[in-house]
Amino acid sequence: MPEKLHIEPATLDDLPQLADLLYDLFSHEADFIPNREKQMRGLQLILEQPSRGRIFVLRSGARIIGMINLLITISTAEGGFVLILEDLVVHSDHRGQGYGGRLLEHALDYARSKGFLRITLLTDKMENRPREFYEHHGFRQSGMVPMRYYFTPHEAKEAPSHG
Image 1 (cartoon, rainbow, N blue to C red):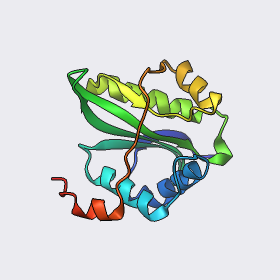
Image 2 (image 1 turned 90 degrees about the vertical axis):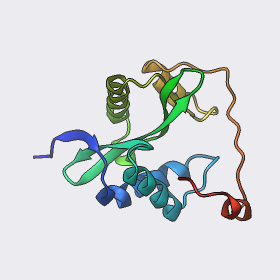
Image 3 (image 1 turned 45 degrees about the horizontal axis):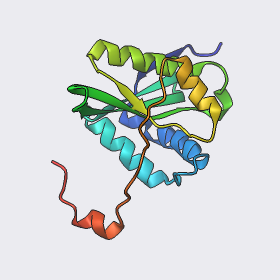
């Protein structure tokens, strides 16, 4: 009999499986290059510093079926704490079964219960399916246009440490 699926906070023991999910996700996104070492480091930073964010996993026994990553920040426009939905990914063997929706609804319930004022996310502008998925769950397109500045390795080494 298959194990019952449940959603719970990720732990440091989950890092290898989470990195595998992100590797798959970033393999299909034009803006990102999968790099297991970087993904492990980023995930570990979040898991070790709960004030920075939360990662929830959809689990079947010891196997992670999907994950959602929420980063915590402050919005001056909203005057309080908001979330950035950084990653939502379901293992390729389990897509199309409603698991992404379960993870997203869990994240929305978490955000409501903790008093967050907004969740912002980026989705691929070239594909309609992800946009339609988020709109189905109540998200609306923004008039804002995302822009990025990437630091060179030299600039990053000269930057002050975060503390």
